[in-house]
Amino acid sequence: MKVSDIRVPDEVRKCVAFIGLPTQSLEGARVQFIGTVFFVLLPSRKEGTSYVYIVTARHVADKIGNRQFRIRINSKDGLSKLVEGKLEKWFTHPTDASVDVAVYPYAPPLETYDYKAVHVNTFLTGEIIQQKEIGVGDEVFVTGLFAHAAGSQRNLPIVRTGNIAMMPDEVIPTDSGNIEAYLIEARSIGGLSGSPVFVRQTVALGIGGFYLLGLMHGHWEIPTDRKNDSLMGNDLHGKVNMGIAIVIPAKKILEVLNHPELVEMRRMQDETLLK
Image 1 (cartoon, rainbow, N blue to C red):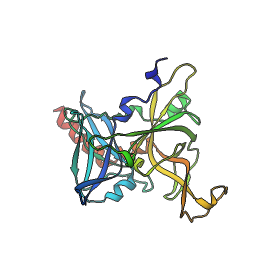
Image 2 (cartoon, one colour):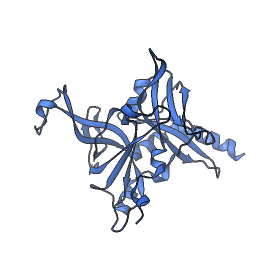
Image 3 (spheres, rainbow, N blue to C red):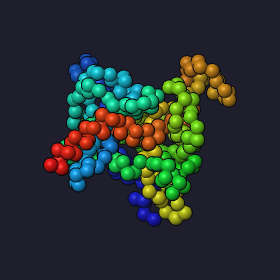
Image 4 (cartoon, rainbow, N blue to C red):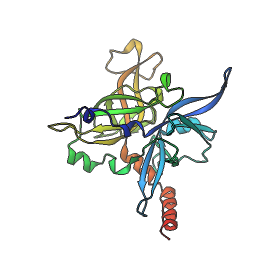
């Protein structure tokens, strides 16, 4: 087994970018990063072409609203570039408002930007879970923004590792209501909202393949004076991270990508490409 087999693959770190809002300070214009986005790829009906989307948490998109925002993407010159945008509409789940996923069609030109998109065929599905016997204890890794060291010239994604702590056999109670989610043993931080979460298959010999488990929603917190209580109320002032993070399943991202409006946009574009 090679060392490279157990390291986090480069494509995991290269699929993310940082999103934020422009601000003014004594030093001039700057960007305050508030979350992470990652790129997802769906194949087109025309061979050799595809559709790319940026994906983030819906609560990150809600914080941006209809304001102008910036996405900082690493570029092939060894630096990074700020992409300006004002989205008229983030696409969210067509039927379930509790799903913390937002997407938008955007494909940075590959000749300029140094990024990789997560192919939908790596999304974890129920079939893959059964075939690969993925479950509690399997290794996970999260990559995204660490606001205290985001990088001055280039995005520096942080990678946090952990394990699946609970599979979504039933809905999980959260501040957003009861939702379908994975629980992982890994601390989430504010900038990781919207980050991709990957799981690596456990095999008898060596290291198995990895799949997109889902999207980082957030973490549970408890009051500092009740950190040893088994049950807590709703007063969460003076919070302590419990070390359990909430992950929106990859299938929910796919459901958003299959929003009727996005499906129609792809159909029309496919027709144009196939002419």
